[in-house]
Image (cartoon, rainbow over all chains, first blue to last red):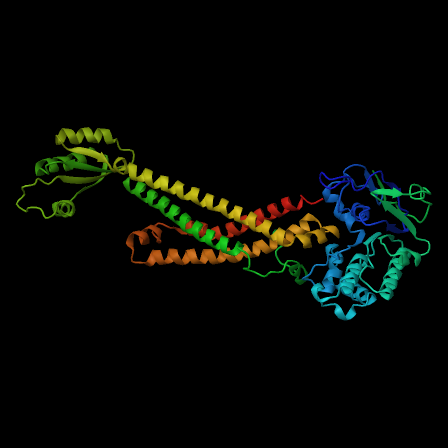
Length: 231
Length: 292
């Protein structure tokens, strides 16, 4: 994959993620982690190669087909990407509203999710009035509110303290136990260590390090289709 | 329902903040609607006036007797009445001729140094043979000439019809300019809200969902502008119709703008709003398709 006419930022990737698996994506800065996540959450198309997600080939899928798949993916952006003029409540409720849920169906789950990330009393606050950590928690709440099949998080604990990081990891693990495939890009070794059983995907200079071959041929796990990237 | 997309719930309306009348759209639409209505009213008035003149001139002829010789005038009248192809004969009174000429020539000598021509208005019956009548009159009064008013007014009618087409062209050009302005406004709105669009796309919003937000905002702005511009134009037209400027009053007043014309003018603001909405939707959808 390359941006415009620039150099390839990802190449020779061939891996599969088990449905229901928990993956940490690691590697030095500039290794291509964010680019790989963009491919996974369908914000970019590969310049060559294939992406199979939820049992469908999506690299060349028509644009109109993508929103339905994106609704099955929760994304925590590194820079949060909250809508600054919407309240925390409205930001978290956005995926449900886009999915066409009624306001009655939205109210309860959003309040519950805000309480879970410790922002019950900040529901009406707008992002510019929230701290970095609070914004990150709103972003995480927005990503998981619709209980996605795939959760993709880019440095999700970069702006929160250790206690909140542990709590968010617990939330990811809970979602994972419910069947959500989780992919977290992080430099936080402590976070990885605190998640026994998680797989580690390491990227270096746009190439996947997979010495054991476990990413090419993952062990069978729960039901469902496997996301995978080949280029 | 065709307008089902127009009402927004509070959550949707919060997605594109900024309120009404902050962008250029309502003002552009108001100005364009105002100008379109005035030009359209002028075009319709010209069309009606041309129609009135043409229908009044149809079958109307004038016999000119250059020296106003009374026996020859009497012979013309007799020949016309006995022809069977004339439904009305109205000699123009000498006093009226004198008044008319005095406007151009100044006070005329009542002693009669200057021979006054005589004019006789004739209304021909439908289907009458004007050429045969002309020959009959020429035979009865040598030198007398039968002139068709339709032929006399031909150049004027041609000019009025050309102006009418010019007005229609101007209305279409203004509609095109309105569309261009709406496209620019839509692109501006997209640029302003690019971050929001990216987020919404990223979490599964469809192009149609996003387009609906912008379409609604621009439609409401256009509606406000259309109503304001339409009301201003209606006020101007009413003032012209009742004003003391007799030409403008006659041109735009009830005499030349009939019910159908007024209904057409009333529809123009709605047409402008509809045009803006459709153009905005197209521009937004086209721009959204550039995203991955």
